Image 1 (cartoon, rainbow over the protein chains, first blue to last red):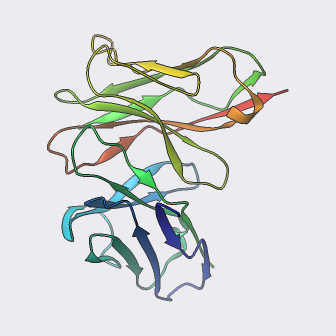
Image 2: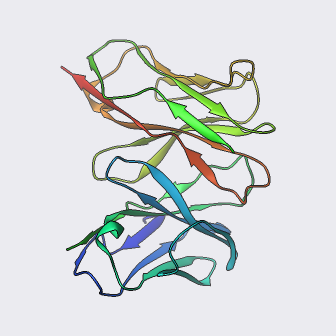
Length: 114
Length: 113
C-alpha cells in the first residue's frame, strides 16, 4: 500500500487551462503539505493543512488553491496555467506539525505547461 | 529567516570512496535537522534525522552529527556504492513555523564503478 499517493504522475497541458492534482495519505497523519520543486531541484513549500485547517500559505499566486476535504486528502487546483508553473509538485504528510517529525513524500506530479 | 546551505554539486566519487556532503544552517532556537535522499524520478525519502545538539543520526551506513557550535549537520558515509547515486537534501524544522521543512539546494552525488 502506497503511504502518500499522488495522481496524476505526469500532466501535460496548454497555457490557460485549469488542472487539479490529487493527494491521499493512509498513514493517519494530521498534517499535509504541497511543495514545488523547480528545474534546479530547489524545494519550496506552498501550503500546509493540519486536520483540514490551512496553516501555511506561502507567497503563491492565488491561481493556486488547495482543498482538504478530510485530513487524509489534500488536493491542489491550478487556474489559468502559465509556462512558469512547469515543475514537479510533491505532496507530503507528517504525524503532526511537531518539530521532531519528518515528512513522508509522495512520488511527485510532473507538470509541463506548453 | 531560517535557511540551509549545502555544498555545491555535482559530487563524483569512485565506488568505496569516503563521502562528505557539507550542510550548515541558520535558525533561531533549536531546530531539528534532517537528511533526505531523492533517487531519479522518485519522491524524497527520509535518510536520517537529529533533534538536539550532539545527536548523531544514522541509517544505511550514512551518519550526521548535529553540531550546534558550528551550526552544521554534515552527511558522511565510509564507503559509497553505485546505488547511492542520488540527490541529497539537508533540511531543518523550527518551532512556531507550522511544521515547515526548509530545504537546502540539494547536492547531486554520482558514484562510478
